[in-house]
Length: 551
Image 1 (cartoon, rainbow, N blue to C red):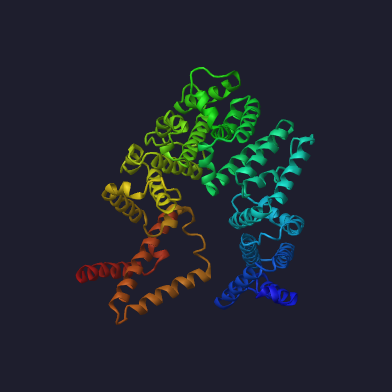
Image 2: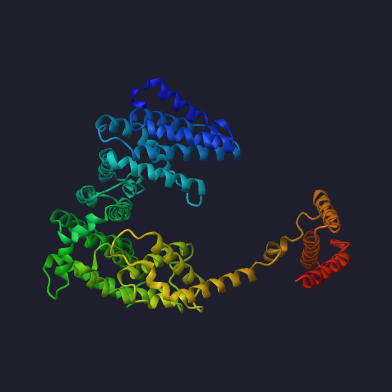
Protein backbone atom coordinates (compact mmCIF):
# COMPACT_ATOMS: atom_id res chain seq x y z
CA UNK A 1 0.00 0.00 0.00
CA UNK A 2 0.96 3.68 -0.14
CA UNK A 3 2.34 3.49 3.43
CA UNK A 4 5.18 1.34 2.18
CA UNK A 5 5.94 3.34 -0.97
CA UNK A 6 8.76 5.85 -1.10
CA UNK A 7 8.09 9.57 -0.84
CA UNK A 8 9.19 9.96 -4.47
CA UNK A 9 6.34 7.75 -5.63
CA UNK A 10 3.75 9.89 -3.85
CA UNK A 11 5.30 13.09 -5.22
CA UNK A 12 5.16 11.62 -8.71
CA UNK A 13 1.38 11.15 -8.37
CA UNK A 14 1.04 14.73 -7.09
CA UNK A 15 3.11 16.00 -10.05
CA UNK A 16 0.97 14.06 -12.52
CA UNK A 17 -2.19 15.48 -10.91
CA UNK A 18 -0.71 18.99 -11.27
CA UNK A 19 0.31 18.52 -14.92
CA UNK A 20 -3.14 17.33 -15.99
CA UNK A 21 -5.07 20.29 -14.53
CA UNK A 22 -6.93 22.26 -17.25
CA UNK A 23 -4.84 25.39 -16.56
CA UNK A 24 -1.74 23.48 -17.69
CA UNK A 25 -3.07 20.77 -20.04
CA UNK A 26 -5.65 22.99 -21.76
CA UNK A 27 -9.31 22.31 -22.42
CA UNK A 28 -10.36 18.93 -21.08
CA UNK A 29 -11.33 16.05 -23.36
CA UNK A 30 -13.13 12.91 -22.24
CA UNK A 31 -9.78 11.15 -21.93
CA UNK A 32 -8.09 13.88 -19.86
CA UNK A 33 -11.19 14.21 -17.66
CA UNK A 34 -11.11 10.49 -16.86
CA UNK A 35 -7.38 10.67 -16.21
CA UNK A 36 -7.81 13.65 -13.88
CA UNK A 37 -10.52 11.81 -11.93
CA UNK A 38 -8.25 8.78 -11.66
CA UNK A 39 -5.39 10.92 -10.30
CA UNK A 40 -7.78 12.51 -7.82
CA UNK A 41 -8.97 9.15 -6.53
CA UNK A 42 -5.34 8.02 -6.19
CA UNK A 43 -4.47 11.05 -4.07
CA UNK A 44 -7.54 10.61 -1.87
CA UNK A 45 -6.56 6.99 -1.18
CA UNK A 46 -2.88 7.86 -0.59
CA UNK A 47 -3.87 10.64 1.85
CA UNK A 48 -5.17 7.99 4.26
CA UNK A 49 -1.55 6.89 4.75
CA UNK A 50 0.55 9.92 3.73
CA UNK A 51 -1.78 12.69 4.84
CA UNK A 52 0.77 15.46 5.44
CA UNK A 53 2.57 14.81 2.17
CA UNK A 54 -0.59 14.88 0.05
CA UNK A 55 -2.14 17.93 1.77
CA UNK A 56 1.15 19.83 1.54
CA UNK A 57 1.48 18.98 -2.17
CA UNK A 58 -2.10 19.99 -2.96
CA UNK A 59 -1.70 23.23 -0.98
CA UNK A 60 1.41 24.14 -2.99
CA UNK A 61 -0.41 23.39 -6.25
CA UNK A 62 -3.33 25.59 -5.14
CA UNK A 63 -0.94 28.42 -4.22
CA UNK A 64 0.80 28.24 -7.59
CA UNK A 65 -2.47 28.13 -9.52
CA UNK A 66 -3.86 31.11 -7.55
CA UNK A 67 -0.72 33.13 -8.36
CA UNK A 68 -0.88 32.47 -12.11
CA UNK A 69 -1.41 35.41 -14.44
CA UNK A 70 -3.95 34.51 -17.09
CA UNK A 71 -5.26 36.21 -20.21
CA UNK A 72 -8.43 35.47 -22.12
CA UNK A 73 -11.78 33.84 -21.45
CA UNK A 74 -10.57 30.28 -22.16
CA UNK A 75 -7.67 30.60 -19.70
CA UNK A 76 -9.99 32.06 -17.06
CA UNK A 77 -12.34 29.08 -17.43
CA UNK A 78 -9.44 26.62 -17.18
CA UNK A 79 -8.19 28.39 -14.05
CA UNK A 80 -11.61 28.17 -12.45
CA UNK A 81 -11.99 24.46 -13.33
CA UNK A 82 -8.50 23.74 -11.96
CA UNK A 83 -9.28 25.48 -8.68
CA UNK A 84 -12.52 23.50 -8.33
CA UNK A 85 -10.69 20.21 -8.95
CA UNK A 86 -8.02 21.02 -6.34
CA UNK A 87 -10.57 22.18 -3.75
CA UNK A 88 -12.75 19.11 -4.25
CA UNK A 89 -9.70 16.83 -3.85
CA UNK A 90 -8.65 18.68 -0.69
CA UNK A 91 -12.12 18.38 0.81
CA UNK A 92 -12.23 14.62 0.25
CA UNK A 93 -8.70 14.13 1.60
CA UNK A 94 -9.49 16.14 4.73
CA UNK A 95 -12.75 14.25 5.24
CA UNK A 96 -10.71 11.05 5.51
CA UNK A 97 -7.97 12.53 7.70
CA UNK A 98 -6.49 9.89 10.05
CA UNK A 99 -7.19 10.56 13.72
CA UNK A 100 -3.56 10.00 14.75
CA UNK A 101 -2.02 12.94 12.88
CA UNK A 102 -3.18 15.94 14.86
CA UNK A 103 -0.76 18.40 16.39
CA UNK A 104 1.98 18.54 13.75
CA UNK A 105 -0.48 18.52 10.85
CA UNK A 106 -2.63 21.18 12.47
CA UNK A 107 0.35 23.56 12.59
CA UNK A 108 1.08 22.86 8.94
CA UNK A 109 -2.57 23.26 7.92
CA UNK A 110 -3.06 26.57 9.69
CA UNK A 111 0.14 28.02 8.22
CA UNK A 112 -0.25 26.77 4.65
CA UNK A 113 -3.77 25.70 3.73
CA UNK A 114 -6.08 27.88 5.81
CA UNK A 115 -4.95 31.21 4.26
CA UNK A 116 -5.49 29.81 0.76
CA UNK A 117 -9.00 28.59 1.61
CA UNK A 118 -9.88 31.88 3.29
CA UNK A 119 -8.83 33.67 0.09
CA UNK A 120 -11.75 32.11 -1.82
CA UNK A 121 -14.25 32.82 0.93
CA UNK A 122 -13.11 36.41 1.47
CA UNK A 123 -12.86 37.44 -2.21
CA UNK A 124 -16.40 36.38 -3.12
CA UNK A 125 -18.05 38.85 -5.50
CA UNK A 126 -21.84 39.09 -5.65
CA UNK A 127 -23.23 38.04 -9.03
CA UNK A 128 -20.06 36.26 -10.16
CA UNK A 129 -21.05 32.64 -10.80
CA UNK A 130 -17.47 31.31 -10.72
CA UNK A 131 -16.70 33.12 -7.47
CA UNK A 132 -19.89 31.75 -5.87
CA UNK A 133 -19.05 28.15 -6.85
CA UNK A 134 -15.46 28.54 -5.67
CA UNK A 135 -16.64 29.93 -2.33
CA UNK A 136 -19.05 27.01 -1.89
CA UNK A 137 -16.27 24.56 -2.68
CA UNK A 138 -13.82 26.35 -0.37
CA UNK A 139 -16.40 26.39 2.44
CA UNK A 140 -16.68 22.61 2.04
CA UNK A 141 -12.90 22.34 2.47
CA UNK A 142 -13.06 24.54 5.56
CA UNK A 143 -15.86 22.41 7.01
CA UNK A 144 -13.82 19.21 6.52
CA UNK A 145 -10.68 20.94 7.82
CA UNK A 146 -12.43 22.04 11.01
CA UNK A 147 -13.71 18.53 11.82
CA UNK A 148 -10.30 17.36 13.06
CA UNK A 149 -8.50 20.71 13.24
CA UNK A 150 -11.03 22.95 14.99
CA UNK A 151 -8.40 24.64 17.15
CA UNK A 152 -6.59 25.95 14.08
CA UNK A 153 -9.71 27.68 12.74
CA UNK A 154 -10.97 28.76 16.16
CA UNK A 155 -7.61 30.37 16.90
CA UNK A 156 -7.86 32.46 13.75
CA UNK A 157 -11.40 33.59 14.64
CA UNK A 158 -10.47 34.32 18.26
CA UNK A 159 -7.36 36.26 17.28
CA UNK A 160 -9.36 38.46 14.92
CA UNK A 161 -12.02 39.09 17.55
CA UNK A 162 -9.31 40.17 19.98
CA UNK A 163 -7.77 42.52 17.41
CA UNK A 164 -11.17 44.09 16.74
CA UNK A 165 -11.79 44.78 20.44
CA UNK A 166 -8.96 47.33 20.39
CA UNK A 167 -9.53 48.60 16.83
CA UNK A 168 -10.67 52.23 16.69
CA UNK A 169 -11.68 52.25 13.02
CA UNK A 170 -15.36 51.94 12.05
CA UNK A 171 -14.62 50.30 8.70
CA UNK A 172 -13.13 46.99 9.88
CA UNK A 173 -12.32 43.69 8.16
CA UNK A 174 -14.62 41.01 9.60
CA UNK A 175 -13.82 38.22 7.14
CA UNK A 176 -12.13 35.99 9.70
CA UNK A 177 -15.11 36.33 12.03
CA UNK A 178 -17.35 35.07 9.22
CA UNK A 179 -15.39 31.80 9.14
CA UNK A 180 -17.60 30.51 11.96
CA UNK A 181 -20.42 30.23 9.38
CA UNK A 182 -18.60 27.44 7.56
CA UNK A 183 -17.00 25.30 10.25
CA UNK A 184 -18.11 21.99 11.73
CA UNK A 185 -19.39 22.61 15.27
CA UNK A 186 -20.75 20.15 17.77
CA UNK A 187 -22.29 21.15 21.10
CA UNK A 188 -18.93 21.70 22.85
CA UNK A 189 -17.52 23.76 19.97
CA UNK A 190 -20.65 25.91 19.70
CA UNK A 191 -20.31 26.58 23.43
CA UNK A 192 -16.72 27.78 22.88
CA UNK A 193 -17.87 30.16 20.14
CA UNK A 194 -20.60 31.55 22.38
CA UNK A 195 -18.19 32.00 25.31
CA UNK A 196 -15.65 33.77 23.12
CA UNK A 197 -18.34 36.09 21.80
CA UNK A 198 -19.67 36.88 25.27
CA UNK A 199 -16.17 37.92 26.42
CA UNK A 200 -15.57 40.27 23.49
CA UNK A 201 -18.95 41.39 22.07
CA UNK A 202 -19.28 44.61 24.06
CA UNK A 203 -15.85 45.92 23.01
CA UNK A 204 -16.49 45.40 19.28
CA UNK A 205 -17.51 48.12 16.85
CA UNK A 206 -21.01 47.92 15.31
CA UNK A 207 -19.94 46.31 11.95
CA UNK A 208 -18.06 43.59 13.83
CA UNK A 209 -21.01 43.04 16.18
CA UNK A 210 -23.36 42.61 13.22
CA UNK A 211 -20.87 40.24 11.61
CA UNK A 212 -20.77 38.10 14.76
CA UNK A 213 -24.58 38.11 15.03
CA UNK A 214 -25.02 36.88 11.46
CA UNK A 215 -22.24 34.28 11.69
CA UNK A 216 -23.31 32.77 15.02
CA UNK A 217 -26.79 32.18 13.66
CA UNK A 218 -25.38 30.11 10.80
CA UNK A 219 -23.04 28.26 13.15
CA UNK A 220 -26.12 27.22 15.15
CA UNK A 221 -27.71 25.65 12.07
CA UNK A 222 -24.45 23.88 11.23
CA UNK A 223 -24.68 22.27 14.65
CA UNK A 224 -28.38 21.36 14.52
CA UNK A 225 -28.25 19.93 10.99
CA UNK A 226 -25.05 17.93 11.52
CA UNK A 227 -25.65 16.85 15.12
CA UNK A 228 -29.46 16.71 15.49
CA UNK A 229 -29.22 14.15 18.30
CA UNK A 230 -27.24 16.63 20.43
CA UNK A 231 -29.89 19.29 19.93
CA UNK A 232 -32.68 16.86 20.79
CA UNK A 233 -30.76 15.84 23.93
CA UNK A 234 -30.52 19.52 24.96
CA UNK A 235 -34.29 19.51 25.48
CA UNK A 236 -34.25 16.20 27.32
CA UNK A 237 -31.31 17.15 29.55
CA UNK A 238 -30.82 20.95 29.53
CA UNK A 239 -27.20 22.10 29.81
CA UNK A 240 -26.72 24.85 32.38
CA UNK A 241 -23.41 26.10 30.95
CA UNK A 242 -24.82 26.33 27.41
CA UNK A 243 -27.91 28.18 28.65
CA UNK A 244 -25.74 30.49 30.76
CA UNK A 245 -23.65 31.52 27.72
CA UNK A 246 -26.74 31.94 25.53
CA UNK A 247 -28.54 34.06 28.13
CA UNK A 248 -25.54 36.34 28.65
CA UNK A 249 -25.20 36.87 24.91
CA UNK A 250 -28.97 37.46 24.62
CA UNK A 251 -28.69 40.26 27.18
CA UNK A 252 -25.67 41.79 25.39
CA UNK A 253 -27.44 41.70 22.04
CA UNK A 254 -30.62 43.07 23.62
CA UNK A 255 -28.67 46.08 24.91
CA UNK A 256 -27.17 46.53 21.43
CA UNK A 257 -30.65 46.64 19.81
CA UNK A 258 -31.55 50.22 20.68
CA UNK A 259 -33.30 51.21 17.43
CA UNK A 260 -35.90 49.44 15.27
CA UNK A 261 -33.24 48.87 12.62
CA UNK A 262 -30.95 47.13 15.11
CA UNK A 263 -33.85 45.10 16.53
CA UNK A 264 -34.61 43.84 13.04
CA UNK A 265 -30.96 42.80 12.65
CA UNK A 266 -30.74 40.86 15.95
CA UNK A 267 -34.15 39.22 16.38
CA UNK A 268 -33.24 36.09 14.34
CA UNK A 269 -30.20 35.47 16.59
CA UNK A 270 -32.13 36.28 19.76
CA UNK A 271 -34.74 33.61 19.05
CA UNK A 272 -31.92 31.10 18.51
CA UNK A 273 -30.25 32.07 21.78
CA UNK A 274 -33.58 31.63 23.52
CA UNK A 275 -34.01 28.21 21.89
CA UNK A 276 -30.73 27.20 23.55
CA UNK A 277 -32.34 27.89 26.94
CA UNK A 278 -35.26 25.43 27.36
CA UNK A 279 -35.54 26.14 31.10
CA UNK A 280 -35.87 29.89 30.49
CA UNK A 281 -38.56 29.28 27.84
CA UNK A 282 -40.45 27.30 30.48
CA UNK A 283 -40.06 30.10 33.05
CA UNK A 284 -41.15 32.98 30.80
CA UNK A 285 -44.28 31.09 29.74
CA UNK A 286 -45.68 31.94 33.20
CA UNK A 287 -47.52 35.13 34.05
CA UNK A 288 -44.94 36.37 36.58
CA UNK A 289 -41.22 36.08 35.86
CA UNK A 290 -37.95 37.04 37.56
CA UNK A 291 -36.50 40.47 36.83
CA UNK A 292 -33.59 38.93 34.92
CA UNK A 293 -36.04 37.21 32.59
CA UNK A 294 -38.36 40.13 31.90
CA UNK A 295 -36.48 41.19 28.75
CA UNK A 296 -36.90 37.67 27.29
CA UNK A 297 -40.65 37.71 27.89
CA UNK A 298 -40.87 41.22 26.43
CA UNK A 299 -38.89 40.06 23.37
CA UNK A 300 -41.44 37.32 22.65
CA UNK A 301 -44.33 39.75 23.14
CA UNK A 302 -42.74 42.19 20.66
CA UNK A 303 -42.20 39.32 18.24
CA UNK A 304 -45.90 38.39 18.35
CA UNK A 305 -47.00 42.02 17.89
CA UNK A 306 -44.68 42.52 14.92
CA UNK A 307 -45.84 39.27 13.34
CA UNK A 308 -49.46 40.39 13.58
CA UNK A 309 -48.47 43.83 12.19
CA UNK A 310 -49.71 45.75 15.21
CA UNK A 311 -48.25 49.26 14.95
CA UNK A 312 -44.71 48.32 13.96
CA UNK A 313 -42.52 49.02 10.95
CA UNK A 314 -42.42 46.76 7.91
CA UNK A 315 -38.78 46.01 8.72
CA UNK A 316 -39.68 44.62 12.16
CA UNK A 317 -42.53 42.55 10.73
CA UNK A 318 -40.13 40.99 8.20
CA UNK A 319 -37.56 40.27 10.91
CA UNK A 320 -40.27 38.73 13.10
CA UNK A 321 -41.25 36.45 10.21
CA UNK A 322 -37.63 35.30 9.79
CA UNK A 323 -37.24 34.70 13.53
CA UNK A 324 -40.48 32.72 13.78
CA UNK A 325 -39.63 30.54 10.80
CA UNK A 326 -36.33 29.70 12.55
CA UNK A 327 -38.26 28.86 15.72
CA UNK A 328 -40.59 26.54 13.80
CA UNK A 329 -37.68 24.91 11.98
CA UNK A 330 -35.74 24.33 15.22
CA UNK A 331 -38.80 22.80 16.89
CA UNK A 332 -38.98 20.09 14.22
CA UNK A 333 -35.69 18.67 15.55
CA UNK A 334 -37.46 17.88 18.84
CA UNK A 335 -39.84 14.93 19.06
CA UNK A 336 -43.45 16.03 19.60
CA UNK A 337 -43.88 13.13 22.02
CA UNK A 338 -41.48 14.92 24.40
CA UNK A 339 -44.22 17.56 25.01
CA UNK A 340 -41.59 20.28 25.14
CA UNK A 341 -42.54 23.82 26.06
CA UNK A 342 -41.13 25.02 22.73
CA UNK A 343 -44.21 23.63 21.00
CA UNK A 344 -46.48 25.95 23.00
CA UNK A 345 -44.31 28.84 21.87
CA UNK A 346 -44.60 27.73 18.23
CA UNK A 347 -48.38 27.37 18.46
CA UNK A 348 -48.70 30.91 19.81
CA UNK A 349 -47.11 32.31 16.62
CA UNK A 350 -47.60 29.91 13.73
CA UNK A 351 -51.11 31.07 12.76
CA UNK A 352 -50.02 34.69 12.30
CA UNK A 353 -46.83 33.52 10.57
CA UNK A 354 -48.73 31.53 7.93
CA UNK A 355 -51.20 34.39 7.46
CA UNK A 356 -48.27 36.72 6.73
CA UNK A 357 -46.28 34.45 4.39
CA UNK A 358 -49.12 32.67 2.56
CA UNK A 359 -51.49 35.50 1.70
CA UNK A 360 -52.29 35.48 -2.06
CA UNK A 361 -53.87 38.93 -1.82
CA UNK A 362 -50.68 40.45 -0.37
CA UNK A 363 -47.56 38.53 -1.32
CA UNK A 364 -44.76 38.66 1.26
CA UNK A 365 -41.82 40.64 -0.13
CA UNK A 366 -38.76 42.30 1.38
CA UNK A 367 -38.23 44.44 -1.71
CA UNK A 368 -36.39 44.34 -5.01
CA UNK A 369 -33.75 41.65 -5.27
CA UNK A 370 -35.11 39.61 -2.37
CA UNK A 371 -37.47 37.28 -4.29
CA UNK A 372 -35.18 34.25 -4.02
CA UNK A 373 -34.62 34.78 -0.27
CA UNK A 374 -38.36 35.32 0.26
CA UNK A 375 -39.20 32.03 -1.45
CA UNK A 376 -36.52 30.22 0.58
CA UNK A 377 -38.16 31.59 3.73
CA UNK A 378 -41.59 30.40 2.56
CA UNK A 379 -40.18 26.94 1.73
CA UNK A 380 -38.60 26.69 5.20
CA UNK A 381 -41.92 27.69 6.76
CA UNK A 382 -43.94 25.26 4.60
CA UNK A 383 -41.65 22.29 5.35
CA UNK A 384 -41.50 23.11 9.07
CA UNK A 385 -45.30 23.41 9.34
CA UNK A 386 -45.70 20.09 7.55
CA UNK A 387 -43.29 18.41 9.98
CA UNK A 388 -45.04 19.99 12.96
CA UNK A 389 -48.52 18.93 11.83
CA UNK A 390 -48.97 17.36 8.37
CA UNK A 391 -52.76 17.43 8.72
CA UNK A 392 -53.04 21.19 9.28
CA UNK A 393 -53.00 21.93 5.57
CA UNK A 394 -54.59 25.34 5.10
CA UNK A 395 -51.38 26.84 3.68
CA UNK A 396 -51.07 23.76 1.43
CA UNK A 397 -54.47 24.50 -0.11
CA UNK A 398 -53.54 28.16 -0.54
CA UNK A 399 -50.36 27.25 -2.45
CA UNK A 400 -52.25 24.69 -4.55
CA UNK A 401 -55.10 27.02 -5.56
CA UNK A 402 -55.09 27.88 -9.33
CA UNK A 403 -55.72 31.54 -8.46
CA UNK A 404 -52.58 31.80 -6.27
CA UNK A 405 -49.45 33.53 -7.63
CA UNK A 406 -46.94 31.32 -9.53
CA UNK A 407 -44.43 31.84 -6.69
CA UNK A 408 -46.79 29.95 -4.36
CA UNK A 409 -46.82 27.01 -6.79
CA UNK A 410 -43.02 27.14 -6.95
CA UNK A 411 -42.81 27.12 -3.14
CA UNK A 412 -45.19 24.16 -2.96
CA UNK A 413 -43.24 22.03 -5.44
CA UNK A 414 -39.86 22.81 -3.86
CA UNK A 415 -41.24 22.13 -0.38
CA UNK A 416 -42.60 18.74 -1.41
CA UNK A 417 -39.27 17.91 -3.03
CA UNK A 418 -37.42 18.75 0.20
CA UNK A 419 -39.86 16.68 2.27
CA UNK A 420 -39.19 13.69 -0.01
CA UNK A 421 -35.41 14.05 -0.26
CA UNK A 422 -34.62 15.18 3.29
CA UNK A 423 -36.17 12.95 5.90
CA UNK A 424 -33.37 12.53 8.42
CA UNK A 425 -35.35 12.16 11.66
CA UNK A 426 -37.66 9.28 12.55
CA UNK A 427 -40.57 11.48 13.66
CA UNK A 428 -40.69 13.62 10.51
CA UNK A 429 -43.86 12.71 8.59
CA UNK A 430 -43.52 11.13 5.14
CA UNK A 431 -44.79 12.50 1.84
CA UNK A 432 -47.71 10.03 1.71
CA UNK A 433 -49.63 12.49 3.90
CA UNK A 434 -50.27 14.58 0.74
CA UNK A 435 -51.09 11.74 -1.66
CA UNK A 436 -54.76 12.69 -1.37
CA UNK A 437 -53.93 15.88 -3.30
CA UNK A 438 -52.24 14.10 -6.23
CA UNK A 439 -55.12 14.96 -8.60
CA UNK A 440 -54.90 18.68 -7.81
CA UNK A 441 -51.10 18.57 -8.12
CA UNK A 442 -51.34 17.01 -11.59
CA UNK A 443 -53.84 19.70 -12.53
CA UNK A 444 -51.45 22.41 -11.34
CA UNK A 445 -48.59 20.92 -13.38
CA UNK A 446 -50.79 20.70 -16.50
CA UNK A 447 -51.94 24.29 -16.11
CA UNK A 448 -48.37 25.51 -15.62
CA UNK A 449 -47.18 23.57 -18.69
CA UNK A 450 -50.00 25.03 -20.75
CA UNK A 451 -49.08 28.57 -19.70
CA UNK A 452 -45.40 27.98 -20.48
CA UNK A 453 -46.24 26.63 -23.93
CA UNK A 454 -48.46 29.62 -24.67
CA UNK A 455 -45.69 32.00 -23.71
CA UNK A 456 -43.12 30.09 -25.74
CA UNK A 457 -43.81 31.92 -28.99
CA UNK A 458 -41.42 32.25 -31.91
CA UNK A 459 -39.13 35.28 -32.25
CA UNK A 460 -39.44 36.15 -28.54
CA UNK A 461 -36.23 38.28 -28.55
CA UNK A 462 -37.51 40.36 -31.48
CA UNK A 463 -40.92 40.85 -29.86
CA UNK A 464 -39.40 41.82 -26.53
CA UNK A 465 -36.90 44.30 -28.02
CA UNK A 466 -38.42 45.50 -31.31
CA UNK A 467 -36.14 48.58 -31.31
CA UNK A 468 -33.22 46.21 -31.98
CA UNK A 469 -35.03 44.19 -34.65
CA UNK A 470 -33.08 45.58 -37.60
CA UNK A 471 -29.64 45.88 -35.99
CA UNK A 472 -26.97 44.31 -38.19
CA UNK A 473 -29.34 43.44 -41.03
CA UNK A 474 -27.40 45.64 -43.48
CA UNK A 475 -24.01 44.04 -42.80
CA UNK A 476 -22.86 42.03 -45.87
CA UNK A 477 -22.13 38.85 -43.92
CA UNK A 478 -25.65 38.94 -42.44
CA UNK A 479 -27.22 39.32 -45.91
CA UNK A 480 -25.08 36.41 -47.16
CA UNK A 481 -26.19 34.27 -44.23
CA UNK A 482 -29.85 35.05 -45.03
CA UNK A 483 -29.34 34.02 -48.67
CA UNK A 484 -27.58 30.78 -47.68
CA UNK A 485 -30.40 29.93 -45.27
CA UNK A 486 -33.02 30.43 -47.99
CA UNK A 487 -31.04 28.26 -50.45
CA UNK A 488 -30.73 25.50 -47.83
CA UNK A 489 -34.47 25.54 -47.18
CA UNK A 490 -35.17 25.44 -50.93
CA UNK A 491 -32.93 22.37 -51.25
CA UNK A 492 -34.89 20.52 -48.56
CA UNK A 493 -38.13 20.97 -50.54
CA UNK A 494 -36.86 18.18 -52.84
CA UNK A 495 -36.08 15.84 -49.95
CA UNK A 496 -37.66 12.34 -50.10
CA UNK A 497 -38.34 12.69 -46.36
CA UNK A 498 -41.76 14.31 -46.00
CA UNK A 499 -40.92 15.46 -42.44
CA UNK A 500 -37.91 17.39 -43.78
CA UNK A 501 -40.11 19.07 -46.39
CA UNK A 502 -42.67 20.11 -43.77
CA UNK A 503 -39.99 21.51 -41.48
CA UNK A 504 -38.45 23.51 -44.36
CA UNK A 505 -41.87 24.95 -45.24
CA UNK A 506 -42.57 25.91 -41.63
CA UNK A 507 -39.17 27.64 -41.52
CA UNK A 508 -40.29 29.80 -44.47
CA UNK A 509 -43.26 30.83 -42.33
CA UNK A 510 -40.89 31.88 -39.52
CA UNK A 511 -38.86 33.96 -42.01
CA UNK A 512 -42.07 35.75 -42.96
CA UNK A 513 -43.00 36.38 -39.33
CA UNK A 514 -39.54 37.80 -38.68
CA UNK A 515 -39.86 40.08 -41.70
CA UNK A 516 -43.28 41.31 -40.49
CA UNK A 517 -41.80 42.28 -37.10
CA UNK A 518 -38.81 44.04 -38.64
CA UNK A 519 -40.77 46.01 -41.24
CA UNK A 520 -43.23 47.10 -38.54
CA UNK A 521 -40.37 48.86 -36.74
CA UNK A 522 -38.90 50.76 -39.71
CA UNK A 523 -42.22 51.17 -41.55
CA UNK A 524 -40.80 49.87 -44.85
CA UNK A 525 -42.27 47.41 -47.31
CA UNK A 526 -41.88 43.80 -46.28
CA UNK A 527 -40.46 43.03 -49.76
CA UNK A 528 -37.51 45.31 -49.01
CA UNK A 529 -36.54 43.02 -46.14
CA UNK A 530 -37.60 39.69 -47.70
CA UNK A 531 -37.92 39.95 -51.53
CA UNK A 532 -39.48 36.45 -51.82
CA UNK A 533 -42.04 37.13 -49.09
CA UNK A 534 -45.12 36.22 -51.18
CA UNK A 535 -43.57 32.93 -52.35
CA UNK A 536 -42.61 31.99 -48.81
CA UNK A 537 -46.15 32.74 -47.58
CA UNK A 538 -47.47 30.28 -50.17
CA UNK A 539 -45.01 27.63 -48.99
CA UNK A 540 -46.16 28.22 -45.41
CA UNK A 541 -49.84 27.83 -46.32
CA UNK A 542 -49.12 24.61 -48.25
CA UNK A 543 -47.20 23.38 -45.17
CA UNK A 544 -50.30 23.93 -43.03
CA UNK A 545 -52.51 22.03 -45.49
CA UNK A 546 -50.03 19.13 -45.74
CA UNK A 547 -49.73 18.93 -41.95
CA UNK A 548 -53.52 18.90 -41.58
CA UNK A 549 -53.94 16.28 -44.31
CA UNK A 550 -51.27 14.10 -42.74
CA UNK A 551 -52.79 14.27 -39.27
